[in-house]
Length: 349
Image (tube, rainbow, N blue to C red; front, side):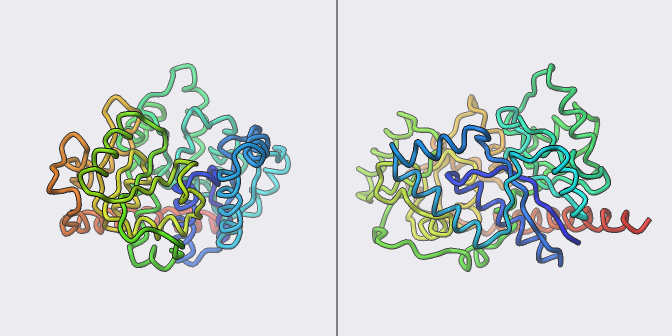
């Protein structure tokens, strides 16, 4: 079949690029041809932001540019932000199946293009979601009608978080299975093949990957640096000399770190996929429901900064985690395969 992945595009966010690539590879393994239909996370502002970054913040612009080049080398990616409904409907007819996901495709903050992100441009029987994420645990009641229409258009729904499953049940009354984020579908060995050696990385370093700068996190990292004597590589701090890297180099930097400190979902996911020791820096007051789901499902709740012991910083036995991950990976891939097979069968009826 010819399959379209529908997802958000964010060349700055490495997790966004990695999840898109991973889902593509697993669908291709099932014998299908795959394109990605993307909506920019910043939509109308994207061009203006990209231009302003070029003028005022060259490191960010260079990182985005390098990731765009890499994405175009490893994927067939079509940006559909400016497509009319007529053009989208014509595009929808070209595909046998539409897979919506993953990342935060249904986050209210980004959902200003529901016609694409709910697959409404394609026939209902073609649509499924893989690890669709809301990114939040609650949806405002005044948006239920929009979500009910969108989710009701998707016969085969899976989500990335436990809270997402609860939301689907609340909104459309369906039981949506919780599956792995696409980045966790690929094994460590598969990611190592994708990785590209990052030049001039320190011999030993503490890696941090935080989406939002927080004083508490920074204090913690300084404390760790003092205790360990390790150089700090901050992948999301523009002033860091290692800031300009592609998603393939991102994997290499993770693979070679002594320990990873992160508050990002994909910082956690890639630490786990690559079997690295990590320290989770999130709080239950945050909107990181997706992180808590992941840690809970794999029995890694003790890796949070408020629970981890000093002697555990650089060690993490992945034996039991990998067993749970292998089982969840099998279940997740089975959902993906079965849903695509059901869509394919519906074509012959």
